[in-house]
Image (tube, rainbow, N blue to C red; front, side, top):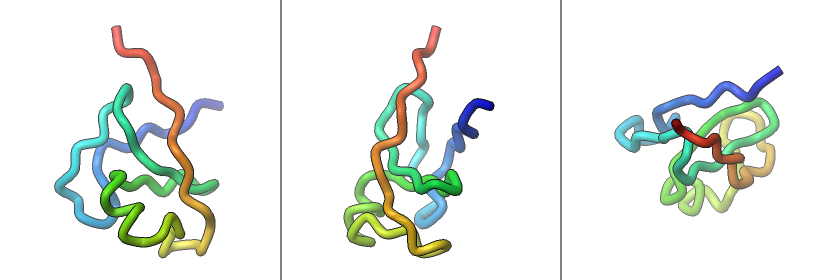
Length: 60
């Protein structure tokens, strides 16, 4: 099963998260832009899990 590549930051909702760009994700696939993840000390506010770099998907 593939990751759901969400296209908006769940915190600021203004950052566009492209499939081949940087983003942070928790084990429940909550997705955040890097500045928001940094501001939250890489802790997901929804589940308390660790936010890690989301794998990038080649676009083409």
